[in-house]
Structures are given as structure tokens and as C-alpha cells.
Image 1 (spheres, helix red, strand yellow):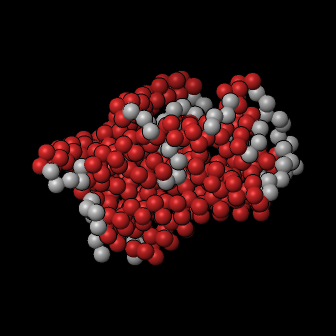
Image 2 (cartoon, helix red, strand yellow):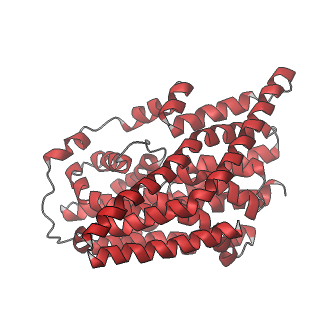
Image 3 (cartoon, one colour):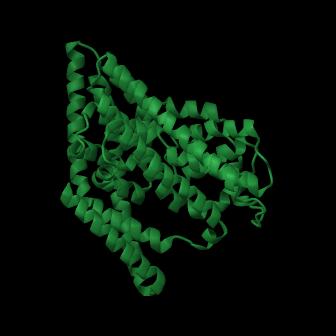
Length: 404
């Protein structure tokens, strides 16, 4: 693992060097040659992670839940994990809303009306509650085939609970699932060898291709959002970790940097999951029952960075168009941002769809989503990193008290 960490550190260094060199030297021929190669390497890495992601979530949750006996340990893990995820997400959203209300970005803005005929697809507001129910209660084979992570989590939990039986025939099935999870982790460990190459390609592309023109007009908003994300990730979550586990903050970041760099490069909590489970079990000696339950669940429902970003966008748009969201609207926004961020669909522009839900529910113009499309990719890297960090801290906190 130390050898892998060194390789990833070098890949980040070379990605920064190559990315800034190509961006500022404007050697068109070299860019035309290298960008397609980097895109292939980056996409292959993500495709491999997505390939193993679905079976990992299914076998991990099923195996973990089937191993949990109906006792105080099991009850603590369920309740403690859900309370932790809910609490940290509430804090993230409330902190964002406090910052946005104090600094009020967008007030007296000269940003023009963003009405755009291309945005009509986001104007058709679905029923948030019923669409959410329909997306998580599905035929399990359809969910597995389509990569519907939330539906897979729900079915895995039910299947795992059904395996908690002393019947001999059911025990055979449980042993099979345990074996399938072990096989999946062997594949994960093999795929981790590709991490330095994939991270190098993805970070290089991010630097080369990111459009900077929109950043100037949205600089104030972006700085505030990134400031909140950094505070949540560098101060609040490490403070929870130190308070409840006594794990040193520097020690935590040192041992988990491979996970966080992968999350930053891929912008996907679920795609980072294979590396997260392997790292926590090897580097932090986390109990398998804890890691297999807390991390897959967190990759689906624990979205601190996503929730705080959607709340910030809603307040920013309200300021641009001169609408003052009252206390009741902002209280509604807290729960709305959390609900919209949980189990976002695994489709292109999924973040834009959930933003449309938030803006539409508050009667704010959905067309303003067009303003955030150019910056979404970069901010997504930071909010995904915080999402994954929250999962890691949650697993370490639960592990501290699971066998106590």
C-alpha cells in the first residue's frame, strides 16, 4: 500500500506538471496528440471502477448485514450510522446557509437572465417524493443492470436480513455471498494497480480542459462554496474523528490520501468505494462488518458536499433575481437539499437534475442551472472528496465503538 501511495503521489505531480504546461504553452499539435490518449486512459480507469462498483455494493452489504446478529452491536451500527450521516449533512447545509446569508453573493449582480431554450428538459419538474419512491423500489435485476445504486442498496439490505437465519440451506447461501465478496475484493486489489495511471490522466484533463472564463463572473460564489467545503472537510469532520476515535488528524489524512485523491479525480463516491473498503480494512484495521455496511451505505446516502452545494446554488439564484427566501423557505431548503442529494441517479448531468428539483420546489427559475454547468465538473471534485471523507470518518467512528 505504501508503494501505491508513492506512485499516486508521483502521478499527481506529473499530472499537474503536464496539465499546466499544455494549458499555458498552447502547443496545439501536442494537445491534439495527448488529449485523446489521456481521455482513453481516464475513461478506462473509471469504467473498471464502475464495473466492480455494483457487485461490490451488492455483495458487501448483503454479506455484512447477514453477519450481523440481532443484538446491541447490530442495533448500534444501524442507528449510529444513520444518525451520523444525517447529523453531518445537516451541519454542512446549515453552515452553507449561514455563510450565504452573511456574505450574500449575487446581490446586485449584473449576471443576465439565463433563459435558454436548451434548458426545457429541466423545466419539467417531476414529483420529488413519488419519483424517489419509484427509483428505490425496483426489480433487483433491473436495478443491477441499470446501475441504480439506491435500489441495489435497498434490495441488498432486505436480502441480507433474510439471510440471518440458522437454516442449513440459507447458511450455504450466506457462505456463497461471503465468498463472492472475497473474490470481489481480490479483483479490487488488482485494479488498484491502475490507480496511478487513471488519476494522472483524469487530473491532467481537468487542468487542460476546464473553462476559466465563467469562473471570473462567479468567483465570489465559488470561493464561498469552496471555503465551506474546505472547512467541513479540514475542520469539522477531522474534529469529529479526533473527538470520538482519538485518531490523529495527520495520521488519518496520511493513510487515506489514496482514497481522497481517487475521489477527487473520479468525482464519484461509488466509484471510489472499492479503494475505500480496501484501504480502511488494510490501513486502519476496520472490522469487516463495519466497513462493508457503513461505506456502501455512505456512498449512496451520505452526500454532505452535494447537499451544501445545492443549498448554496438555491440561495445564490434567489439573490441574483432579487427574491428574499424567508425563514420557512430556508428551513424547507435544508431538508430539500438533503433529500435531493441522496441517491442521485447515475445518469449524465445527474447533478443538474437534482438542482432542477431544488430550484423548482422553491419556485426559482430553473434556467439558471445553465450558469453552473461550466463550473460543475471542478466543484464536483471537491464536494465528492468531502462526501467520501465523511464516509471514512463515519466508518472509523462506528468501528471504535462496534466491538467496545
